[in-house]
Amino acid sequence: MKLDILAIGAHPDDVELGCGATIAKEVANGKKVGIIDLTRGELGTRGTAETRDAESAEAAKILNIAARTNMEFADGFFVNDKWHQIELIKELRKYQPDIVLCNAVEDRHIDHGRASQLVSDACFLSGLRKIDTKHDDGDDWQLPWRPKAVYHYIQWKDLEPDIVVDVTGFMDKKMEAVLAYKTQFFDPDSKEPETPISSKNFTDSIKYRARNLGRLVGTEYGEGYTVERYPAVDSLFDLI
Image 1 (tube, one colour):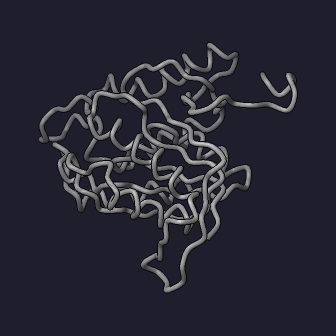
Image 2: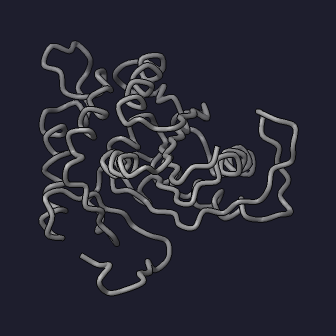
């Protein structure tokens, strides 16, 4: 299945938090979008790998994405080595995305920066024809594929974005997808331990951070990304 956008996150809920509104907007515009979760989030303080599986499936329905895959890498312990790169290359060549969205280049959680570099490296290596791969789904050798662009969404840290996407009108859909992860976020009746993302302030911050990015670019809401190479436009009038 050919995808327009492939969003990749170290953990289930990374994608929804980082670029959920962008995905909702692009799906509404007719784009095919898929998600890859690198781990099942099994080391998370709240919930279990099984509850994350169910929550990520529900979030996928809400966002109406075309495909969702979990690589089942080891949460907290996956590394950026040949084996992990090859496994991810197989998925990139299977889905052939034009754009890849992935974790922040630097963040509070050690998996985020590691995932960011793993995805970047795999996207480059995926374009090399002398790396031979076969996907588990078939017996044919895969063709090389390199995405046109890799963009890194912003997570815990307020990194300065290189580009901001106007996501006005899609924040409610994003919040619905985020809150599908019921075990992870604010619940006054929960008996689970408190975490940095389980407070009401964190849940509220999802909207007020997006509103602030929107303010800075003259829209109601925005989602920010850092880029690996200079973004190009056809005309100055493409900039808003």
